[in-house]
Length: 475
Image (cartoon, rainbow, N blue to C red; front, side):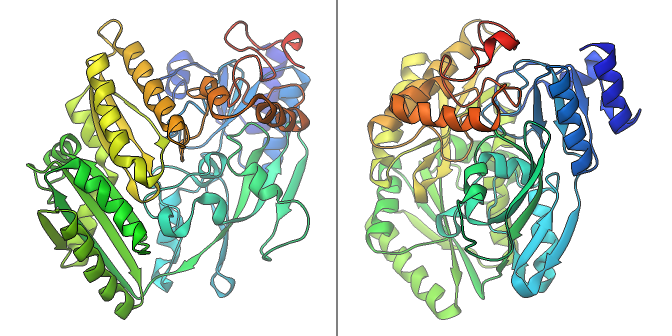
């Protein structure tokens, strides 16, 4: 980065609004995945206008740029593959408006997911999408990745709860799309940008849908001596037209790691458990508890528990949502995958994951959103041992290819990023990939915004693995 560009950036954000020292930049070279690359500078704008000004400077000096939320993503979505300017939204973290009468709120992208619910729960409202990282992840990142979470089985993912966006486009212009009003006419641009993984625009303001808290919540724990029986239960619940708000599965190795770390009350000797949650009117919930008890017992659950208090319920969910931290106590490194399969394929996919673990000599534990077949195999490895990182990556690819083969997907909520981009050609035909590339090029013809993501090498607007971003690499 030349001195002129750097000074112009400092003029926008001020002398305390940027980081450029190597030891500081190291903190921004990674997210929750396994890839790394340092930016040339990290900047902290405080307003939409400052974001737009920074983008215009990047364009003027032919610099790549990327937006960053909390860095909790798991697919390399915010890794600055070509260096350049990283625009952090850490200082744009205010809830701008709460409109409970219309069940809406307006937030800046740096607002932490859980803080939205905390701001309105006193009035018996909540924000539904709840990624496991909800205590740290931010709304802007959730919009970029179309984040999900345990309760999306009933409530849907982020795109189902985003009503409007304010955006800075790659040329520095500011637009608004959507609104507080439902079902506005015209193209669904909010839907297009939600889940676009920060490759087409930078989100600077979000209007969210709030939901009223249910009358009753019941949390259930079904305990199994067989992962196959546990997986079969999920399909049977669906077959009986019962829709819990969450159905989470933890296998034995995962259970033991979680219980040793959190003491949440999970059985240490089980092969697997289902954590099931029901919400709604009191009478309906109580009836569904008994229906699910019957299903679990018919699928050979050895024990069926109902949380007796809010404290017991919170402890069970604490174990589930702190699971990744629990893994860190047992392995110096781990690699989280994110494939999706039909519910009827869960048991077979768990068997396949075990075969992959044996093939590469690795330990793989499982914790996932069983209700919608969103698998999260956690591959344990030691990067200090030569070849183990590569083995973990190959194992992940084998699992995702299996997911595709049984009618599933390479990602349910973590995104494609740079981790799964080469698998996109196995998920979609060439014509579909070309159309995705056309959308990218429509909004970002110079390929300066988050380059080298989402599309396979050779189909994106630059071949980032071969050379850094230059004018010659843009289409």
